[in-house]
Image 1 (cartoon, helix red, strand yellow):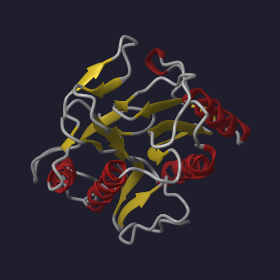
Image 2: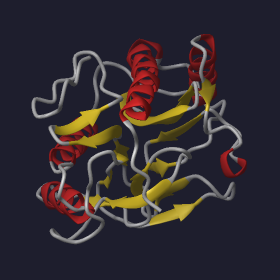
Image 3: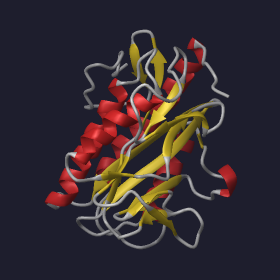
Length: 262
């Protein structure tokens, strides 16, 4: 069932999203060689709780951590570990915040150190641009297939492949709601977007393959051939004036978004 949110609910989700975005902003300086994804997880959880929120992922379908921290070939749902990060690692940090009962969800990618390889740099740039192209399609009357189609068409120009096993989703009152928001798609197909819907757009882009394999923990998905994977994600509300992005960060410019910095 697809739920339509009231203005009050969207405003509450925006407050939650502002807290989440501020934590991603803090991670820009925090993530460096020598720390672990376990350290990242505890950093994020403390920031959420110090600001009156709850780490919504803890306990969700048995998940034990505040974040999913996926490194290099890990596509998503990576368990935080004590393994130390090194310069050049590509780290994706995905988490949900519950603030006063309102949810937000966002993933951001970080390269450890100041000198990413050309492969990592291009993959990050293309994945972020795919997200923005998908966001631009988040208009009343469009369909979810329009979002996936433009993202997939763009990344294939670089020889990349979208994940075939995961998707974006509706958000609120729980973490995963209808509709599914695919990373690929056919224009004019899928659920129709209506004013008041809140969804995530979160392309997972891999260098060479769309297929995943699961680690023995039953959660962590990684590319079957060991190639690099990248992900970016925003939460947004569908409005009559265009997408209202609730998780935008300072310094992030999305010209077609409604009031993106407020």
